[in-house]
Structure formats: structure tokens, C-alpha cells
Length: 425
Ligand SMILES: [Zn+2]
Image (cartoon, rainbow, N blue to C red):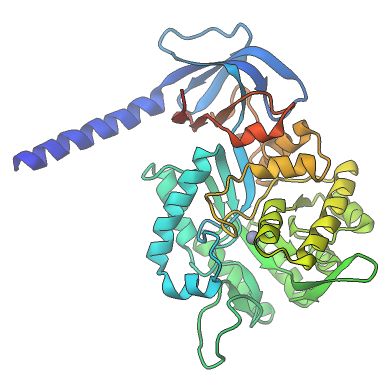
């Protein structure tokens, strides 16, 4: 073997030893202030012991194992890793959707996704529910696999692969009819095609099924939102039932009142965007145990870009509806639609919008992006709050987010699965 080859071998050996060491590392985190993501109590001067990838002890007087590396966050607020329940890692806020699909290869888009998931983790998001790959087929499954293998850093991912809509009803839709170009979702017509698509997506690694229930929307004279539903009730119910039979949950894109109604009637598990929620739909969603994932940041970003009066109206309607749903205690999970806007924009801005525009208490906004989002994912036993036995996904921010929610955009420490990914000193 050449000298260079030997050097490389030694370097790789050291690299893997470092990974092994970090997996077995014991840490004692000194938290000045602890918001655990579940209780309303804020605890002061708590020690969190992490062994391997789990939290093993927590308390003011928790014993610090002698092999522990001490992480001093005694002047910081420590929280569970954030969860964004609505993202698209395979896009990056491109202005021209068609150009992204037809000029960029899936390998390029996957490399870009590697940078995006790294950015999300850097900002404190230790888990994402990615709700369809926007024409990049099953590449989201590959990114998840690479993260789980430790090849690249990134949040825990729950992915939806291709998404579903009816034939002809998704972007890009402004190209010549002579070109038979692939679209940003899998298009199906009829119950058989819907069932086949759900089965295929599950077979290739979909954790969730994403269905576009309505498209586009209109604002009515009474200030409500109506829209066109894409599927017949029979098609929709067949796909939802098949997903459930295969033990997958269903996320429904639904903005209008009739879209939300159709999605609820079909038995979906979460309503995405949901701007048209009214009293009776909020009550129905609550009775059925359906979550609302409102994605405020993408609408705010689009409004900033285009100053569209329609978007402004939509946002005003959504903020009112969201405040109502919050008061009625509908389960609301934080989601941003990151990817539909550039990943360089910090997703944690959504916490601030929930507080300042939708009237959430800071504590409830934090829960929406931690324990409630974990419940939506069906992962409450492992992530979403800080307690002994939970996976060690932990972040820290300067200051007190209960006084100033915007400090959640200033994460300075990130631990995922017991490994320190970021620690600004
Ligand atoms: Zn989306």
C-alpha cells in the first residue's frame, strides 16, 4: 500500500473511533433554565445526564457519573430539539418550480438536500416530517437512510415520498401540452390507481402518505375560503383507508372549507395549511383527533415576496381561525413548509408567528414544535420532551423564550441522539 493510502486508512480509523466514542459518550448538561416541552413548569439549575443516545437522569441533584463530560449551559435555556412537521427537503425556495424540476437532476437536488437538512439541524430542528419530494421521487428516503447510517448530519426524518394528486392537478402546469413532462407529485385517477400508488410509495419507504385534497382556493364574500376538491370522496377514502391498513398516516393539503371537510370525512390524520378552518370544522377535527399544521412562515414569506392582496387576506383569515382553534384546544403542530421558502431562512421564526400573530402563549408555541409535533408523529415515547428514558435530542438558547420567543432563532447548542452537533462558545 502507498504511503498516502496508509495515511488515509489511519485517518478513517480515527474517524470511526471518534464516532464510536461519541456514541458511547456520557455527558452531564448543566441547564440554567429547563423547559422540558411537556410541563408548564420551568425548572432552574437542573442536571441532565446523557449516556449513549438517551437521557438517563435529570434533576437538581442528579448524580454526575465520573466519566461524564460536563456541558455548562448554566446561563442558557435548555429545551427539547425542535420538530418541524411540514417541510420539503428536496426543494430550496426556488422561484421557478419548473426550472428546478427540469434543469436540476435528482442527484443535484439530493446533494442540495444534504445541505438543507444540515442547516435545519444547525438551527435546532432535530426531527422533520417531510411531506413530499416535489418530483424527486424517492430521494427523500435516501437522505433519511444516509442520516440514519451516520453518513451525513441531519434531523430524524419521517418522509412522504411522491405525494398524490389527480391527473393534471399539480405544478408545473404552465408548459406546452405537447411536452409530457413529469410533475411534482404522483398523479392518479380512480380508486385502483390511488391504491396502487399508496402501495408503491409504502413499498419504497414512505412513512406518511401526502394527499393534495384541494387546489386552488378562493376567498368568499363572507370571508370564508372555498376551493376545488381534487378527488371524489370514494377515491379519497380508498387511499386513506389503504394507507391506514398499511399502518401509515395521511397528511392532507387542504386550505379551503370544503377541502378540509372532504379530508376530515375521509379520515386523514393531519390538515396541512388549513386556512379555511371554521368553528364546525375545528370541532370535527378535535372530535376525530386530527392535528392542524398551519405553516404560517411560508405564507408570510410569499406575502413578503409578492405583496399579493389575496395572500394578505388569506393570512388574516388563517390567524383568526388559528386563534379560535387554539382556544378550543385543537391539537396544533408546528410546521413551516421550509423548502417552499429557502432553507437559509430560520424555520424557528414559526414559533414567533404562533405567539405574535396567532395569540399562542410562548409555552404552548414551544409545545407545538416539540411534544405536540412528536405526538402527531406517533413518537411521544422517544422524542419531543426532556425526561429520563427519552432520546437525547436537546437544544439551548440564550435568554428566556417565555419573555422573548425570538430567542428560539438563536440556538447555540444542538445535541441529537446523544451526539453534540453544535456548541457555540
Ligand atoms: Zn408543503
